[in-house]
Image (cartoon, rainbow, N blue to C red):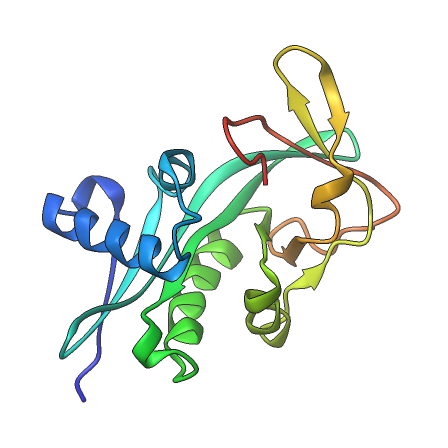
Length: 180
């Protein structure tokens, strides 16, 4: 089977490619994927993996700001990672992540993502670390608010800023829908 990997910015994806990505994500998340989730993955770098049957896997990295120890760091935030059901556990998720991690490691202060229980194994096997510190967001109305429900699902990857101390909080920029 021939595998083709394409890396492109959102602006360089065709409408047909965007439709295929959205379809893959809706199928992979079994109806738990809405417009805000879609929006979170736009405006950054996409990795698309095609096989003989079409789009087999996808992931994106977008820039977010994360407050840490008095600085606002550039975070490569991984979004919309999915693999088509018939090719799961075949290494395609790892191929997507390898390309996203290359971008994170070379262009961002840190990597961050929110992992489902199903996805956490992939990320930890690749060196992502579950954040054991507090997670907050900068709310447009209430200032900095703690997000205790997100704290078990947040994973980070050291990049240009070096390792992070979970004794200090992470403060994510605000966005509609799920903040993480």
